Image (cartoon, rainbow, N blue to C red; front, top):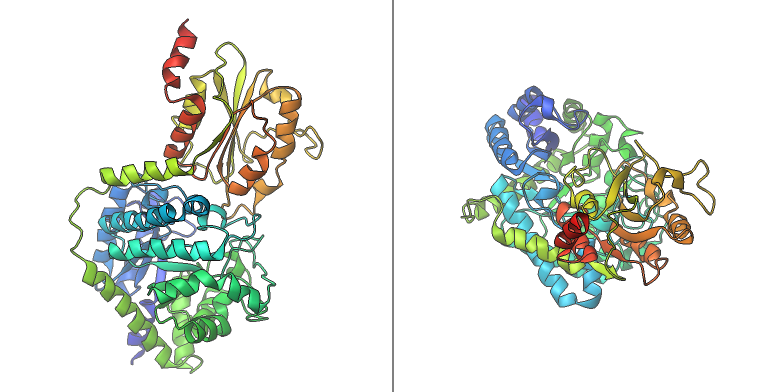
Length: 538
């Protein structure tokens, strides 16, 4: 193999980041999303994979065509982090309630939860195919056994190993039925961390026996079911390797995953730009160590050219045997062949079908938890709709026409949106029994809506906010009119106990517009719009 041939072969194993938008100026994250000139150059030189984010579903469809045109042979792996359906990342497609929805449902109705999980996979895969994607970076196989997990949380299918295994297996059947590659992540299990690997390297101190009994259970199931790929976790697990993160560990990726668990598909790293790896290693050495450890595909290196150069040099110097390159290329080719065999079976022309919308609504409906009476209208009082958003700005789920804003507003509640980049509701010293600065909230009733879930790069900031004491403070002054929680089930479980029976409270794992609409329709009454208009006109 010549140097040029080796470089093109290595390039096939990289997955680089692109925006779903067509124009460079539309990129949401230009730090990671390459400009079009660089994308065209790298794809033309042999790079074999692209992970996309942003834009509409229609834009994504056209973007995938463009990327294939730029590719040297059109033989691309095109993927996205769409754990909650295509609409989670691409506007206009279906945004599904997060997987934890079915983890909670599984406790009371396991058969129905498994049925919905399979439809979840089928819906996600069918829309992915229609948009041009052939690889879905899901399901999350992490067992969220730590309620304080800042980054997995509702992305997981539950906090019980066997239930998670059953649900991800059902989801995977749905993916397979629609002919899209799946990805079991984050191996060997990111569910029991209280640190975010986007920002630092988490430590998992459990014994090997515990890892076998809990973390590995869902991965074993999907490997047995023939999942196409497994994504590594940026975790330090001394019981498996005392010195190297799992992504860079031969003990984890080759000895455990390949040899002991018998996985023969593609191993893909989690993004190498994440601080857990990039803080200590440059783009070249990170890629080399991951490939040497047993990874086949290198996802989002900080510098694609340096990653290719590093692996080529390691192969030429004998640091990595040439056979490793051949094995990875063969696995990649086999995965693409699975996609090709399924191509042409999709006959639906619309990107989103009525059945997709119906499923999204059914999923939200099955997840709602309501207690207490209906939320009272306050057309003549200084009522406040206090909305707490924990997430990056701008928020895709909270626009000016969002139900969380407009529905309470028509019921007499003035919206006050809080975010740590803007208005904060807290007093100077929040470590007291009265953490809220009530003067900022007027003098009337307060309807509290909390959008709280694990979000990457946030380091679990919402965990430290004293909403329990805030609710107790509002109760003491008789100003709490209702509570709605969107996202984290653990916060809901702890806060709902504080709310007395005569005050309405509700929960939905989802935060998307459909979740807001259904939850508030239930809390306000299905025909509340008509009654609210009457209150204001009488």
